Amino acid sequence: MDSSDKERRSLKDVLSEEAKRFLKPPETTEKEEAPCPPPEPDQPNPAPAEEHLTHMTVRPSPNLSVVVPAIVSMTFRLPAPLAGQLVGVATERKLQRDKPYTQQDIVVEALRQWFLRNGYGPFGGC
Image (tube, rainbow, N blue to C red):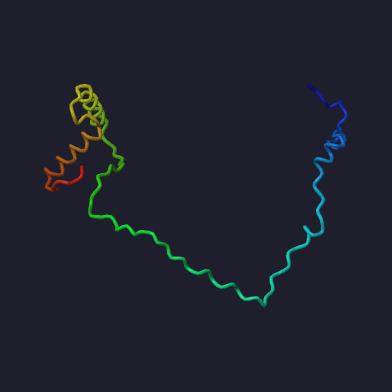
């Protein structure tokens, strides 16, 4: 649609009087425009509020010597044949419902055995 030959009109020419009144910003009074007076320098600062003591019960701190087992995300690069064999073994064991069958559990068990075999001792929690 080509509108280059049409006469251009401004928005205020098109709006009705009611629309113009609606869009017109409200008039302000002199009270609203007057700035707030600055604070008087002779007045001292107010006294600080009194401290309120709460009557909350204090819980003893938890025993931090308890070890909570956690899983930590780590990223390793494995040779392709080893990664493929891990996927295949995990899938086969899962179909047979023979634990450990997740890749994670198989790797955990393999690392445990490696640590024990190489004299690093057992690790708790896993």
